[in-house]
Image 1 (cartoon, rainbow, N blue to C red):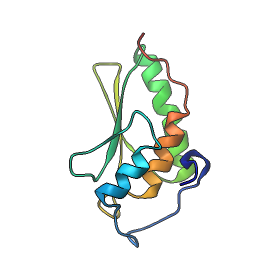
Image 2 (cartoon, rainbow, N blue to C red; image 1 turned 60 degrees about the horizontal axis):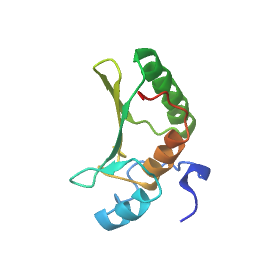
Image 3 (cartoon, one colour; image 1 turned 120 degrees about the horizontal axis):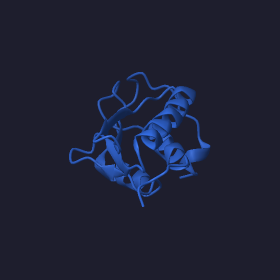
Length: 115
């Protein structure tokens, strides 16, 4: 596998099958701090941000990545600084390589975490 952050998302529009658990686990090794869901249909990452402003700033950066790749995560902000990001390819009902590409690009974003 080549470095996922160097790749570009490819439209799948339901034309491919979702990754199986074994393949998803192999891709997961390429994106530290992300977790595979119990049903292996999504990956997620949790952040404890420095404050509300830092959380919103990271959301904005994630938005830019998502728009650039045309692959959009679910983003949840709770407790003013607890940020959860979840990726899944909705059109295929599970994971695709695109999810791991976006996760790798999100990992490269600077984030002001609570110390």
